[in-house]
Length: 353
Image (cartoon, rainbow, N blue to C red):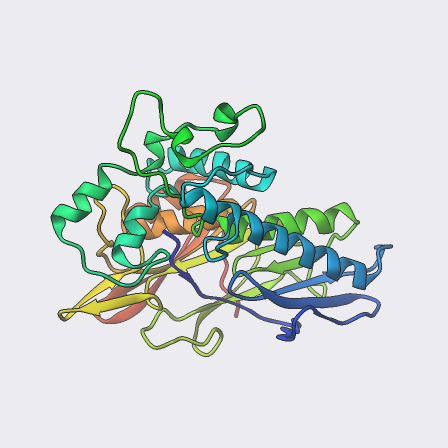
């Protein structure tokens, strides 16, 4: 399950909150609006780009609407919502691609990132339902009947002649009593950022920062320097992005996805106990460790999104090992040590002065 995101942009970015607002001028421009339950902001260099800025704005908005109609669990008319309700649907390429890539991530993370664990997230109140405190027996019952390990690796394998399917078609033939319900929260925003970035590259944009809750950036910022990004201090009550910054860093690569995951903004307390937003798909219970947030830099935002969630399941020590073992990744982990916030960074993750 995707934890609440809390990453903050720095340096020469105009974050505009009016729907699909747009600045048109030579050099860098910013387009922003509303998408996926929040705001988005796309800053890019228009030099060498022939497409009119208004056309670019409309194309970005259209792509975001297409994503929403496909894989949003909050849009009751989306393909995902209808699929989860057991209706017959004709999945589009976004739905099919996100499903198959999510299966790859499921396998790479040993099942720690599981988009088919939606019944567990709903059971705990971190999906599309209200908060609840389930019994151990209920957790185990749900755990036994959901998960990507019980489903086909690629939905294209089970499409009918008219390219349609129902959720139960996704279950492996040898199984039964499986609850098929998907929740793409752990990867959808990173995936969306990659799609927008792909569109911008297709029209000749070389310098960009795409922020749709998760970030993809490449090239240089308006000052000709690497993009600078701040990470919010993971403290309870720090609900305003940028209000309390733990650290600032410069992007060490020419292009990458940047995603921060954490538990401190989305949780609930019941009977004096705090229940974190991150569910471990292996146990069915919220994680309990001292890692408060994980920022991951990866070749694309989809991968960064998934691996940031993965680190929050792993906990501090295993997350350090994982990030350090993969040369394509960099990371910053913020954790609690005796009531004090501490920061660990991988070798290539450079904090700004």
